[in-house]
Length: 165
Image 1 (cartoon, rainbow, N blue to C red):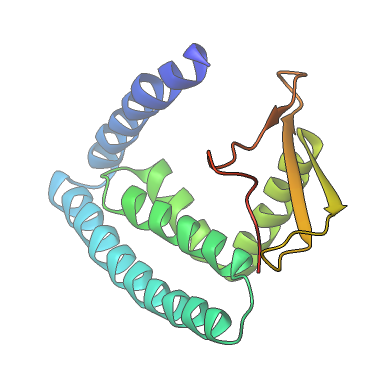
Image 2: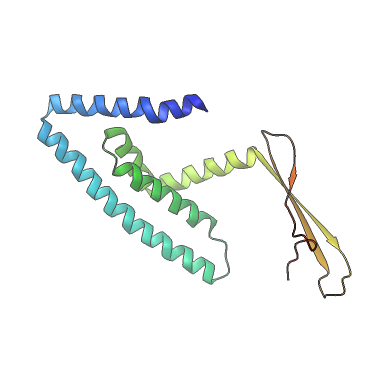
């Protein structure tokens, strides 16, 4: 984890700086500066537009009683794209613009879902009971990550199990 953070916060910015300096040698400092500003403005505008579209999609799905999982992941990737696009640099701009392409986001969502499923396990247990308060089903859920090897049960309120009506 330390190496990943080192890469993220030191090596990538140094590579970005080097690329910008090399680009300014080949073209000019003014053109390089203009390109950085243009990609920032264009990227922010695209991210804003796609973000609003995704926000409307999330609201529609929730209004229809659906869980907007895919749209939420799209929104997260659009947010990341916007953040890296306003960061000066060539590599971050390429990454940000790639995240704004829907087929690329779809592929990344597929990879992320497979990665998450590979490293986690969900178990649901349903117990039927006869309770005087009208509830007749208690659901006990566990979430286990592949790294820890131990399960942790969801905490329940002090006055009894979590009940769904």
